[in-house]
Length: 211
Image 1 (cartoon, rainbow, N blue to C red):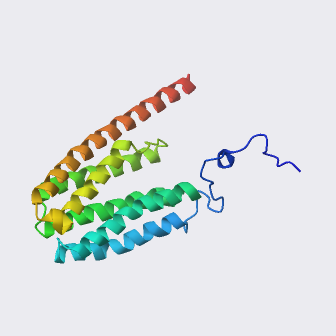
Image 2: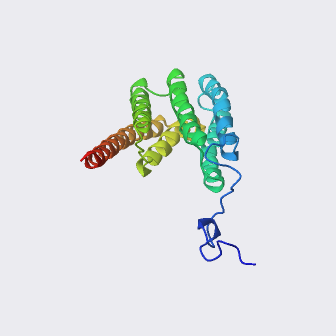
Image 3: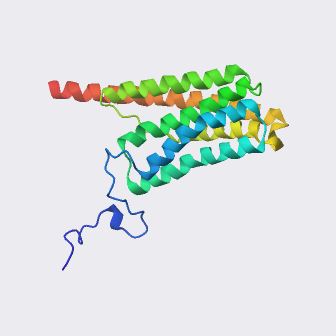
């Protein structure tokens, strides 16, 4: 007997695509991706303590690498099992706790100057609040590739300060940190423009319906 959708296969039935696990809906909380995100949140404070106590060690560098790479793993699982509203909130939160926490821990340990770290933190908090405000208005601002790039550069700046091999040459970490500052603010301006454009389009649609 032929399957009802045999003549119109969905995206998960096309050869070469990743099959989405239908057990998890948009409102699910205990998904594999979210479990990894929870672990990243719970373990981040332990890493920050390690960084403050010994900011240039293989133990801290290894721990940082595992937690930073887990972001890619939970992203893969989210795409495979389906994205959720809780994951959309928790994943960026875990990223910011981990990255900003590590940056400020390196400031506390005397490895980074506080000014570039504060510049990064101000942008991250401001754009998160801005996107939340847009979301309450029913406007979605999709993540940009530049946002992903700035996060990766931030992570490499932290890694360069933690690994003993690169940490001895402090210039590498400092240069990466300032590159991260530039990318962070450029991507932030792009999000502001995207949000402004989305608000303008919504206003035009509203006026057309009101006529």
